[in-house]
Structures are given as structure tokens and as C-alpha cells.
Image 1 (cartoon, helix red, strand yellow):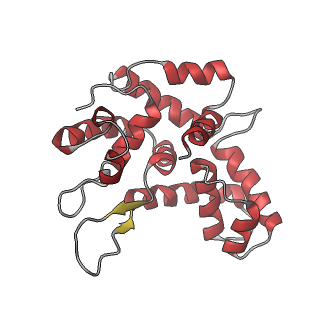
Image 2 (cartoon, one colour):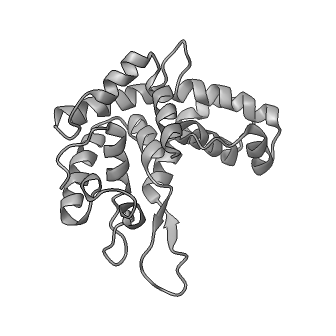
Length: 216
């Protein structure tokens, strides 16, 4: 079992990806081929470590937890059942539930604007996962105008990840889980937290730069 992580983001990503699937296999199978064994959760020990991380995640309020799940959990789960009819993947119900929580959370902020659930879902994912889909692409995919996308994006982005003038809700969620994981000894040093403070960026902006660096 991995004793400590150097990064809260890495710990969350591992725990939220460690899903036991049909056939008893883990959805990290492909990921295991690209990283060293010491850096991943595997088998019974991996399940134990994942439970330790998730127990801290479950202490957060529903909105904070949903922000972190949408940011770090896989949208789909690899299926290893081997059936001929299997598509080899299925939606991750934990991710879908967290996204639903966030859509309900931002609904009052968008009062008076067109109700377009695919648009709102795409923007929440774009903001939290940094998918880099353009406003034009989102507009075409969701059947709306680019200016509508930009209007919605301004509201959603300010609320969830904040602006230069005001921190967003993701910042509070990330800093809270960071504290809990470090107090439990799951994340072993303060490198990530110190980097955020030293950079002068919000946690959301720091996450954006981290994702850009590893092309996540």
C-alpha cells in the first residue's frame, strides 16, 4: 500500500479511480502500465488506502465533495466483464451524481436564463476539468448561441473557481481536503499547498496549471 502521497490531487485521483468492477478488476488497469507500482492503488491494499482517502472526502459538505468528485473522478468506468455485448465502459454513477448536485447548486445563479442542461453540464465540466472546449464548439454541440455560452460561463466560472478578485468554491473545497489528508498523514508534505500560496494563484488556477502541465 502506498503510505503517503506528495500531492493531494494525486491522492484524490487515485482514490476516485479505484473502483472495483465486474470481475473484480480495477479500472486503473491501463493507468498501471504507465506509472511506477509505488504510485498507484492496487488490490486489497489499494482498496484500503482508497477507503482512507474517501473517508476524509465524505466529511466535506455535499457541494464541496461534488466539486472534487467532478474535478478528479473518471466520467466513465472501464468494464472487464468480457461479455460480447459489452461496450467496455459505462458511466461512472458517482461522477454523474456529483454533477447533478452541482447543476442544482448553480441553478439559482442562472435564474432568468435559458434552461439548457447539456450546456450547463458542459460548462461545469469545462471549468472544473479544464477540457478546453471552445465556446463555439459548446454552442454548436448544445444548440445555442456563442454569446449565451459566454454569459453562462461567466456566472458558473466565478461561482465555482472564482476570479482574480474573489476565490471560488473549489478553492475552499480543495484546501479543506488538503488539510484533512495531511493531518491523516496520507499526503506527506506541504509542497502543493506551499506552491499555491507562493504563486499567488487561487487553488482553481493552480489546478488549471497542474492539469495543463500533465495534459490531464
